[in-house]
Amino acid sequence: MAINQNLKSSTQLKSRVNTSSPDLVIESTRSNADEINSSLDLAEAWGVIRWVLVAWAIGIWLLLVVLPGMDKIINATTAMLHLPTIFIGLGLIGAILAAYNMRSDKHLLWFLAVLLLLAGWM
Image 1: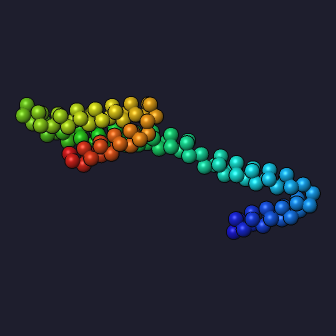
Image 2: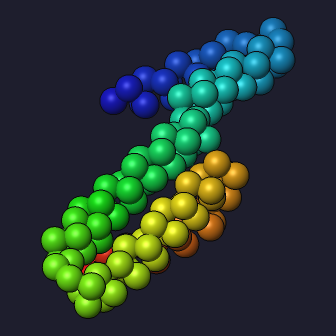
Image 3: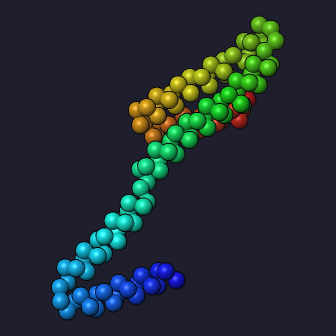
């Protein structure tokens, strides 16, 4: 409904302005495009999403890799079985934090996927 009103008002504006100065029509459409672009700032949203993904990865590592691994360690034999996966996860968390700080988004997503596979395997 609001879109129809906006379309009607812009066509009425064009019909009124075309007789006097066509430059005003171009500026009004540019201001509408600028408003749309400013309201949908994807770079700012991706910054928040990246932070959420890193926090999620650390939570997944803690809940699905570290806590069950530590609960299963009873003696040296079980420690040798479960500590390598905990250290692999810790290495992946370090890689995720490094990729986050370097803003290397493709590596960040790859390390997140590998960590999720490790957590699913555990």
